[in-house]
Image 1: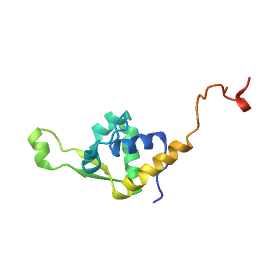
Image 2: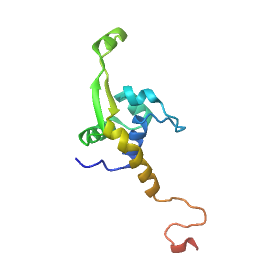
Image 3: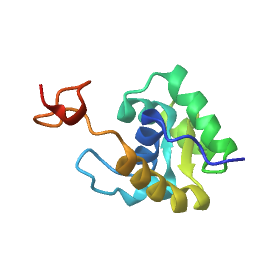
Image 4: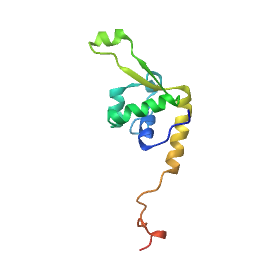
Length: 123
């Protein structure tokens, strides 16, 4: 399957799965352990109806894998098992480049001295 389209939502999810916090710092544990659905929803601010179809598209593209946590962990904490998502080797390799390209190609919005809709920006 082709690489996923780099929509703003896709970029947000990939940054979360790369383990980058709001300051751009990396959290290595996210790369190895992944994040479960509710944690991803909270960290990205995306509703489930947006997040889970996007994760499925990333999974079908081979960028994300999903797995269930061990029964023993959930039972010890007295809750249902969580489904975790993490980048595959392919996703971990391609996501940083795709994010950099998407950022470089993003339209510049609100440049000082440039009025929207006017060539050259002068009024």
